[in-house]
Length: 202
Image (cartoon, rainbow, N blue to C red; front, side, top):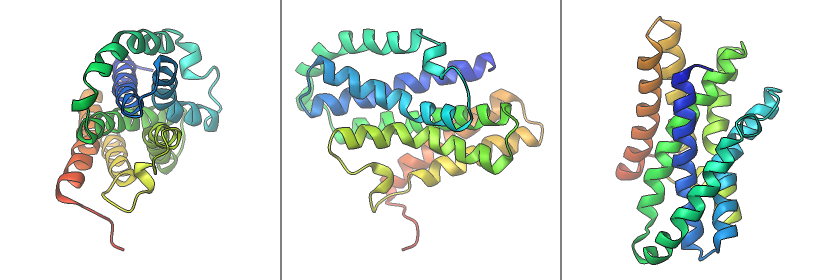
């Protein structure tokens, strides 16, 4: 894994963990609940990806600083979120989730490419990495997962962003350009889908 992809992975963990913190506090969970939801949100998609790609150890086991980071963040943020509960909105979760979706989608596609998977498999691994943590978060919080709601584009945004990243790589773009383009396309497309109510044809 390159230094850039590693940095993107850390940023994705923080973004998805943040959406987990916010959702858990909206549900009035205690510290244990906040940590659990954030942990599952941050690591669910990557864990499924690693299992499907037969990568051992799992990425958060290999980097024990990742779960430790989530634990520390849960300790630090829980008291603040308790006081800010009345201003924590669905929109805040959407922003954090859109950013995490973009970051993790690119990471998943990159790791599958590193494992020399066919390009379509790389795309699907990116999508799985991007969406599955959010699916688990919403299920634990007794919500219909965003990806399954009859509404704005979600998995499609990840799908498009992964193709952008991989095709730019294929045609010789620099890693930073490919990574940035994939992240921005996925996250921006998701936010625009919410803003303008973009949906797949019924």
